[in-house]
Length: 368
Image (cartoon, rainbow, N blue to C red):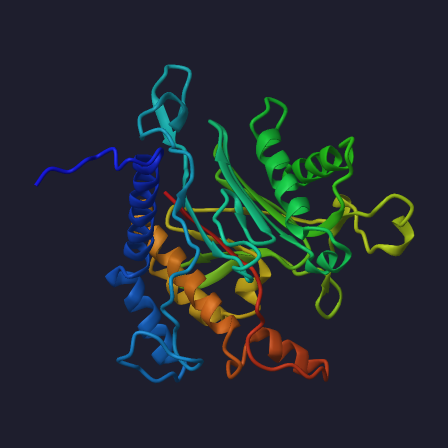
């Protein structure tokens, strides 16, 4: 049987190619989600929280919904292999004194409203934004969470957070960047945003981490309720300090419309909480927006992160990041889940129950 591959229609081949590429992308997503290790993470943690195991592929609220998420694997730019000139400290006689630490980093996330953000965009999950980059002297990661209230004024909250993270990523590669001052990086990115000829209106929280390879020290700058955890030997050894004006109103960088400066809540980058902490090989670092911390109990996070201690394979680290993001996504949509967010609300006599639907961004890194 002869087949006319031209099909008689202009552009048909191209459409078929696009369809095949799309199918391959979906298969890759499914492969990342349905890995044995990620499934074991979710099953074990869910049963440990009192959930009931189900033989069905999906459930309506009490279990995990295995629908296809808008999820992509994203690995940090490749570090040079051990033995590269920038991976060691050498003495005057050129002998190796010590090997410099590095981070193996991955990212995963979900948009809260997939109808508004139906497609994956690099560095963006809904109104959240993130970046991972590296230089010979430092590894830098950042997340930002756009304030969703701007949408009611016709402003896309994701533009502000996305521009801020892109600016910080670009500036972190400049010769003037100081690995020990992520607070200055955040301030410079914010000035760049405010200096645009076409104003970028909006607000966001932000958290930036910088591993100074020379002294094996992690330097951090956090404003608002995004944040980080460092886990070592099954325990949290360093964490960000949440900044709130009052419940569910975090500190935030803002750019109000001209003439409305007094009507918009805004905190300067100098308000960011800064810390530094000496890391060791085997430490695991979680950097995430509040969509994770408001929904996933810390004990679950510690269990997943503890199993990643010393892992240098990006694929295994990605499976753990997938597990965290999937759990946060599912719990955020469960009305029966006693979430950390609802627990904090009750302490303040505020009525709140169930998970908190939100954008979810997970950056996971292992110190090796």
